[in-house]
Image 1: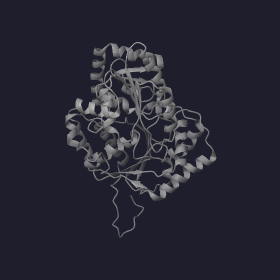
Image 2: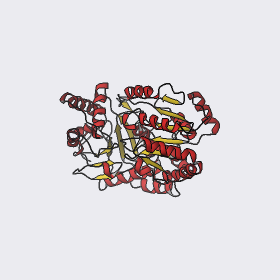
Image 3: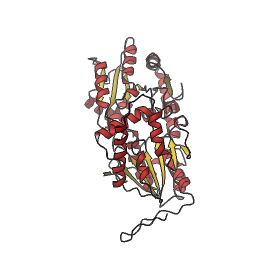
Image 4: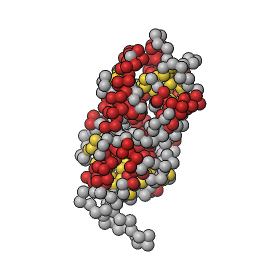
Length: 428
C-alpha cells in the first residue's frame, strides 16, 4: 500500500495566497470564506496511480491546498498487480464504448483486488471520494461514519452494457456521484453533481518559463525550433488518435514546412501504452521532422516547454474524459485543434478559443489556416487563456470541492478520531 498525504507534491506546493496573481479577482477571499463552513472535516481521496494521467496530477495539487484551507485532506492509492490493471483497462475501454470481452475470471480479479485493498486502506473520513472504476468496489468496506462519493473522470455516456451493469451495482451504494460533463452521467438513484477538472497555473507544467529555459529544454529533447512545431501531448492511447495526427501532419507538410512532436508516456494503470507507442513509431517511419518522445510521468517542465514552443497544439481524441492538455496549452496562449470528444468541446469554443474537428482532413485544414494566419492564431490564444482563467483553474476546482463537502456534510457533526487507547465507536 502506498500513502501520499498532503506533503506529496512537486517538492513544495504554492500557498493559496500565491494564486491572487493568476486567479480572477476575489477568488482567494471567496475560498477562505467558503472553507469556514467545513474546516476540521476530513476528506479522503483514493485513485489507482500516483503518477501518469490527469487524476494523479490534480490530486497532487489539490490535496495540499485543501489542507491549507483547514480541511484534513489525504490521498491513498490502490495497490494492484499487472493483471488487475489489464482488467481495469478493459473496463475503461468498455465504458468508453469499445467492445471488450470480459470473462468471469476478470470480474473476480477486479473484486479480489478491491477486497484486499479494502482491508489495507484506512477508509476513515467524513467524505471519501473514489476516483474512476478501479477502486469503485471499495464501497463494500464502508461503515456508518463517512459519506462516499464516486468521481467518474471518463466518458461513460455510451458504455458497454454488461460492464456498466456490473459496476453500477457498486455505484448505486454511494451517497452521490460526480461527473465531468452532463452527457457523461447515467441514470442512477443517487444525487449527481457536475465538476470540471482543472489545471494548476503555478505547477511546473504550467508556470511561466523564459525563452532561454524553453530553448534549453527543447535542445535536450532533440527538437529544433527552426520551423513551426505541431504538438500533441497525451498518453499513447488509440482513443487519442496519434496516428491520425501523423496523417494530418503529412497532409499539411505537402504545402507548409513544419515539425510534428508527439509527446507522452504511460501509467501504471494503462498496460496498452507500449503497444500503441510501437504503432505510432511505425506510422512515423523515418521522417526526421516527426519526433515521438516517450516521457516519464514527472516530465512536467518538458511538457511546459514543448507547449510554449508549439505553434499549434492538437488533441485529436476520438474519446476523451476531459482532456486537460487542451487547457494547459490554452493557458499558454496557444490555439488548439481538438476532436469533438468529451470535455474538449467545453474547453474549445469554435473560432474563439480554438477549433474542433471530426476528421484527419479537417485537422489538416485548420492547421494550415493557423500556420498561414498568425494574427488569428494570436487572437485565439489570447481569448483561450482568459477562458481557462475563468473556468478551468485549480482555484475554481477547490471551490467546487468545498461546496460538495459542505453539501454532503450538512447536518452531520465533524468526525473525530478516537484517542489511541480508545477503540472507535460506530457513532458519527
